[in-house]
Image (tube, rainbow, N blue to C red; front, side, top):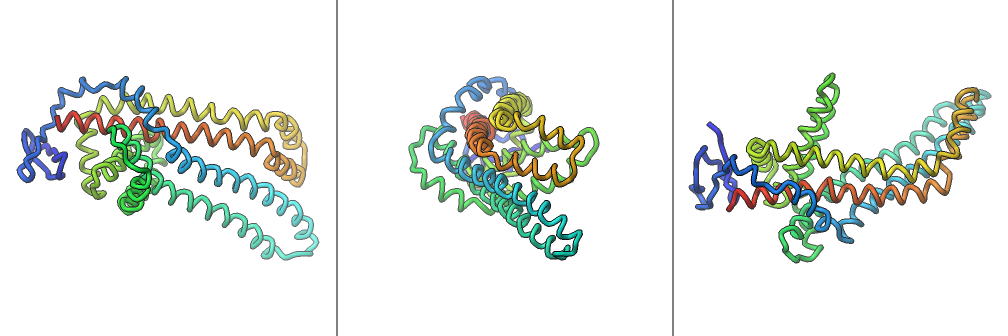
Length: 314
């Protein structure tokens, strides 16, 4: 027996139920109405509600910090290796001392990445809630979205953790791993919206996401294909500033790689990562990628979710 879920209270209902037996809300999902979803409008009208200064900064600043930390530590690690290679060979310093110094830098980078991942979970709660309010025409203070990010953090964290684990497990499957990863990502992105917008727990949010995907499969396929195309294009455009910043150094790097010693290669890599122009280019890349995440990562999926929710409740 197929089950649907009450849009108001989340009660499981048997197929064909017109109203929820608990709260009385009209609940039937009419699959034939899927063709009525305004796909082009969903994609076209998602950009403006996604863009405001709060949403931009909460994505841009952590991303920029990650970029700057990586650009600062990379040449330091290369130079540490170069300066200590000869010392290790002459036993001027011990191998253990060198490894500890290198691990210290690596731990800073790993710690930054871990904090960035944890903050992205909070970030998703804030941004999806704010975009949902703006799409719905509700003028609510941004502080409410900031509080919502904290209150929904446990459920979003469970979803993000399971998504990461499943992505690793299925990603190794030959030929179809990428496709399974895409399906899982789509399902869990829908869980985020259910958890944040409708205040469901992870289990209830997952059930509703499966129900929506089952009844609106074609709409999700179309929208997510468009999202991938748009998002991929903008992501590539975002790399252009970095390519321009390092393109003049690439021929010399290839020359060193083809005939240079290890120390020469590492020194050349350190010069590339220390280039001030690369720092400026990274800022431009972060700006473009932030806009991309807001529009394709949060805006379009949230608009689609709200359109389906509105159709179900009408």
